[in-house]
Each structure stands twice: as structure tokens, then as C-alpha cells.
Image (cartoon, rainbow, N blue to C red; front, side):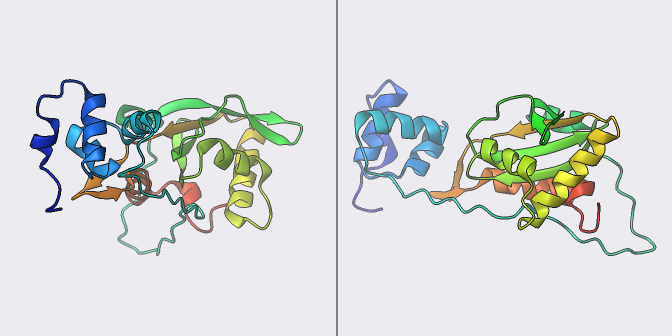
Length: 214
């Protein structure tokens, strides 16, 4: 924007990140821009400005939840076989081990408390990645939806059945999660979690994400 001072002008003489965040917001910079310019998490920018009561630079956060991604594979004679992906690949990439699905009175329960942040999650059986999904509303509520497995939500019901079958067979079903930092490109917000989910599904083709499985 031509009517606002440059980044260097705004932060000149300011020592702390918090001072720079407040100054940039008051100068008309968006929160996503501030995050990218200062190379800090968007959540940190939002926290500083919320505490300061500064609403400038704030955009309305819209979260659109969608059904988890499933893919259809066309069988071809020369199509390469996709090898199962070890959960260690995700752990090395930054995923965290959250807990395990455990048999319960109503089917199964998670033996850990998931965070309320949105992010990417993965289900692991026999140490291999079986399913990858995305939630923008919150990991806690999304994972709980699999436990309930409403019939009207076909993907939830299908994956719930797969989890129950694995547990009934004496297998361990682990849950991994990742909460990538918000990013920006050219001052525009980028949904890093959505890109991570799509990239993983395209690369490793988790069996439970494939239509017709189960």
C-alpha cells in the first residue's frame, strides 16, 4: 500500500518483537504480513495484538470444514506399487505422537486429550500410515467425530469401521498430529495444513484414504 510507511521505517529503533508487532499493525499491516515479515507464528502476532486491544490489521477468520480427502486409483498394468509408509517418516517430518485408540464401551476411545487447534492427523496401524486427514475447526472435535461415526457422515462411519476392525484384530491404532504454522505469500494467507494433507495423500496414498477400501 502506497499510503503506509515501509517495514524498515516502522520497526526502526524498536527492539522487541512485541513493539514491532504493535507498530506494524497500527501502520496498517495485516497480521499475516506481520507474521511473514518478522518470521514468527501468526498465533503470536494475534496474541500480542489481542492483549493490546489492537484490531487493525485483523481479518475475519473463516474456517471451512470439509469431508476428509479420499482418492480413486485407476488400475493399470504398469502402475507402480506404492510401498507402505512407516510412521517414522511423519515423525521425522515434525508430526507428534498423540496417543492410541483403545477399545471402549461405545466402540473405542482416544487415550489422550487432543488439542483444540486445527491441523493434520494420521492413523497408524502396525507402524504404517493408514489414513491422513485435515481439520480446521479443531483436532479434538474432529477425532471425536470418528468415535461417533454418524451414518450420515459416510467417511466418518467408514473409517470408524476400519478402526474397530483393526482393534478387534488385536492391532494398535496410533494417532499422530501436526499443527503447522500459518504462512503467507505476497501478503496473502496460505493454509499450510491443507497443503501438507494434500501433499501427503498424493505421495504416500494411505490405504484408508482410497475409495473402496473397507
